[in-house]
Each structure stands twice: as C-alpha cells, then as structure tokens.
Amino acid sequence: MDRTTATLTGLLARLSSLLPAGRRDWAEALLAEAAEVPPGAKQVAWLCGGLWLVAREVAMGNVIRACAFAAGAVGLVWIGWPGASSNSATPLNRVYVTGAVVLLAAVPLVVRRYFGPVRRGWAPRAARVCVYAIVLMLIAAKAVKDRDGSKLGTYFAIVPAEWILEILLLLVIVGYVAGLFILTSQRIRLSRWSLPIGIGLGVVTAGALYPLARFGFGSAGRWWGLAALVLPLVTSVIAGRLAVRDTRPGVLGAFGQGCLAASCATATGALLLAALTSATIALFPHQVGLEADGKSYIAAGGCETCDPVNTVIPRNLRHEYWVEISVGQAGTGPLAAILIAPFLGAGLGTIGAGLAGASGRRRRAGSGAQAAALPASFGQLAGRASDADRDRAIGVLKTAFEQGRLTKDEFDVRVGRALSSRTYADLGELTVDVTTRLQPGG
Amino acid sequence: MARRSGFSAQTLSVLASLEADPAAWRHGYVLAQETGLQSGTLYPILIRLAERGLVEACWEDGQPAGRPRRHLYRLSSDGLAAARSALAEHERLQKRRAADAERARGRRVAVKGA
Figure 1 (cartoon, helix red, strand yellow):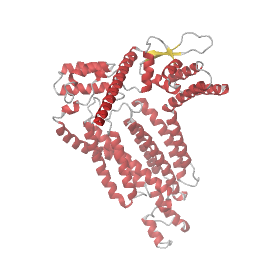
Figure 2 (cartoon, rainbow over the protein chains, first blue to last red):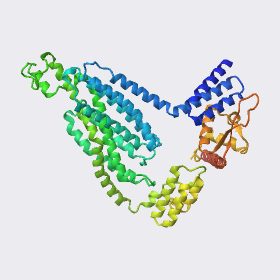
Figure 3 (spheres, chains in turn yellow, green):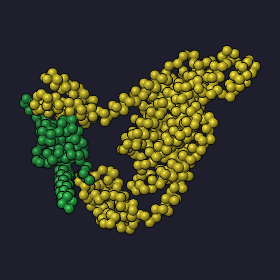
Figure 4 (cartoon, each protein chain N blue to C red):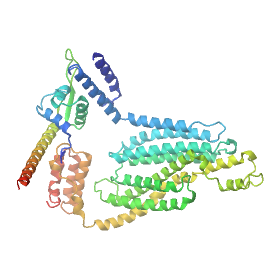
C-alpha cells in the first residue's frame, strides 16, 4: 500500500505540471492534504481523486484539442504526402498538405489574439470541430484525386498558372476556416440561432445534393443552381426572423445576421459537397465516368487517327491518359464553387434579410409587451451577475424606455449603473419597478 | 425549480460547511470529511467557487513542522451572501416539497376513505 501511495503521489506531482499556472496550486493543495488523510484505502482514494482532478482540468484545457488536431494533421500528411517523383501532382500535394497544416494550426491562434476565445455554448464549438474535420477531409481527398489524375506525369505538366490557382484555392479554404473562427468568437455578437441555422441548412442541402451527383456536378447541375438560389434566401429569412427576437444590446442587427447566416449556409454547403465528391473520386477513381472526348476515342476502338484531341500521347498510353484526364477533371466544379459560394450567399442573403426585416418590422409593431416579459426578476437571485445578466437587464430597460416607462435621462443613468453593477441584487434594483408591471398577470 | 440558485447539491454542501463558521480558514481534508465528498469532486467545486470570487484561498503562513503547508479556504463576503441566500432558498424548497408530499398523502388517504 505504501508503494501505491508513493507511486500515486509521484504521478500526481508530475502530472500537475501539465496544468495551467493558475490551477497548479490546487493540485499541490490536494497533495499537501494527502498527508492528513489516514493511510490506506482512504489515502489512495484521495490521491485518485487528485488524478481525476488533473485529468479533468487538463482535458478542459488545450491538450485534447491539440491532440485531435495533431492526429488530423498526421493523417493528412500520411495520406497527402506520398507520391512517385514522376507524378506531376506530387510537389503540389506536398505544398498543399504542409501549407494546410501550418495555416490551420495558425488560424485559431491568430483569431484568438484579435477576437477572443470561442463563444460559450455548444454550437460554436461544434461548428469549429466539424469545419476542421471537413477541411482536413477535403484536402486529403483532393491530394489523392490529383495524384490519381497525374500518374502520367510528363503529360500532365503543372504550369505556373495552375500553381497560382491551386494556392489561391488553399488560401480561400483557410479563409473559410478563419471566417468561421471569427464568427464563433466571443467578440462577435450573434443571436443564438444564426450560426446553427446557417451551418445546419448548409449541411442538409449538401446532404441532399450529394446523392444526385457523387462525382461532381454531372447532370445535377441545375439542382446545384437551384440550391444556390434557394438556400441563401431561405436561410436569411429564417435567421433574420429569429434575430429580430433577440433584444440584447450590442447584438448584430437582423439584417446583418441574415446575410451572415446565408453566407455560412452556402459556404458550408459548398465546402461539404466539395469534400464529399473529392472523397468519392479518391476512393472510387475507376467509377468516374470518362470525359466526352475520351469516350468517343474509346468507342472508335482507340485508333491512331480518331483521337480527337492530340497525337502527342503514345498509342499504348492513350486509354490510361483519358482515364486520368477524367479523374483529374471530375469534381473541379464543386471545388470551383468554393471560390464563389460565400459571396453568392451574402449577396442573396441581403435580399432575403431585407424581405424578412420589412415584414418582421410590420409584425412587431404593438407586440412590445410580449418581448419585455422575457427576463426573470433579478432581485431574488443571489450572487454575482455575469455579462449576459447585465445585457438582459439592459434589454429590460430598453423595452421599458421604448414603452415610455422611463425617460431618456432615467434610461441613460440606469444603463450606466447596469453596466457597472456587480451582483444580481444591483440589477434587481434597477429593473424591479419596470419588470413587476411587465410580468404577465402581475 | 430545484436548482434556483444554480448550485448543485454537492456545491451546496460545501457552501453549508464553509458557512457554518465563516471566519475560520479550513483546509481541504476537513471539508471533505464534513461534506462526505471525494477529493475529485470537492476540489473542482472549490476551484469554480474561487474563480467566481465566492471563496478565498491562501497558503498557510510559515512552514509547520512535520507536515506540508496547507491550502486554506473560507467564504468571501460575496460568497457568504450567496451561500446564505442559496441555503435559505434550498431550505424553503425542501419545506415546500415536504408540504406538497404531505398534502398528496392526505389526498390519497381521503380518496381511499371515500
């Protein structure tokens, strides 16, 4: 038993160095207390509790996130890096996977520096994890697809213009990630549903479009077009409507939220579809349909003179050449859609949000009391108020002012006091005479 | 309704044992004994309470002979107010629940009698 406690004590002392500086005291305190605990099972239980504490605190910190990203990065490099030196896509792929890993690791750090950590709640975290997973999958799948499409390296020389386009695409994808991190950060104030609605509708649309054409646009091009029109309009209307109900001060207006949600929806949809189609092509390259030119070549029996495009390729390689051309070309439509999707979404979202805003305003006139009945009275709660509580109190005051219960001067004074108040009781004092009469039936 | 104050039952028990003698500094093992909580539950609670400014924590002055220095805890003034109102709220709730149960029993008896 002595040895067990000694081992546990040593382990705990060593592991506690993983904790952030502010938390190390607590692990040390727990260790110091261990001397008080009667030796034997109780002491072992006490020390095990300490290990549990460290595990909990470390898991809540960055370690799990860093490990998950490292695993994803290793997977990406493992899939994307290999390639024969004769394959013209190999250098591009290597630049791609390294660039992607470096940029994706840097984005959270840079965004955190300027926009603060992730916003509270499940949606922002879930969105970040999902988008990282999608981007890693997209880049890995694209690398495999490009490799399969360039095995005859000498005939698929990658020209500078292509390099520029490919690097641009990578930067756009990283731009998506940065945009997402900014939208899910603490400094950006969105109402609770804008982001889940945008991303959720984007995912649903992509899920519906994917079975129609698994290797790219194919014959489902018109459905893509339709979705690109309908998705942002619908998203902006719904998100705009819901955002109107959010009366907290400092929250972005309904119009802005509608546009942002629409942009999120199209961006997510395009990204997910590109990832899914690229992955399908990477996994099943032999099922990709042949290009029209290649098809007519094969149909004609693969003769020397009936190759419609060129005579440079040696005869024995022509079939392989057309297969690779087809694999390389497949899925470029969805990839190109990534470039324009967010702008299209924002543009159409403006229209949708405008429509939603106009009808929302008409409907809201005269229903102010309903919105004001929302907040609980703060007076009964004990303890310290949070920023959200202060915002809620200011929302109450705002409604009261709009309804003529407070003069402008009173309103200004009270908002100032609400911002500097520290406890629920302070907030209760500020709102009690305007909330009591707003409570339904009270 | 059950958790109006936002504190869990375990946190309430920690608050109750700190509130029993608010001026005294306690150390972790004493609290664990009083509340019956495991160290792995007690310390996270203390950390959250300290971060919310409800509990003050400090290291014991000087180096005592024969044992390591203790980390000591007591309620801050905000913590005391919060603990008192949360405990009062909890007690009110318990009483109401007991009364409800009593009434329900009475009703059942009445139904049986009828």
